[in-house]
Picture (cartoon, rainbow, N blue to C red):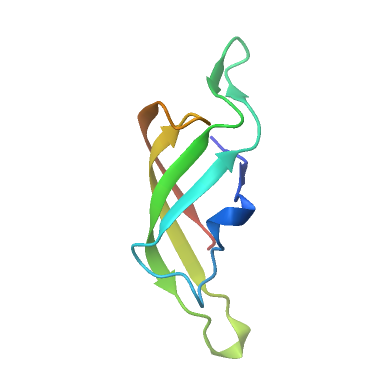
Length: 91
């Protein structure tokens, strides 16, 4: 399932030239994800993970790659965390 994410301004950037393996990443879920009857992932919650792959930009303008492995979703107030495995790659 595709999940629309937004990186909050105070959480830095994902960029193959500056991101490093092990960097912590937090992204906000932009829109509710549901099955038509109920919301499964609520908008406004956060996904937390780590950068697990960084390939710098190559010659001939081939784009770099950043991969993030998410492990938790967290309520906006940070009070509750739920295990949640997901991956993001800029590839």
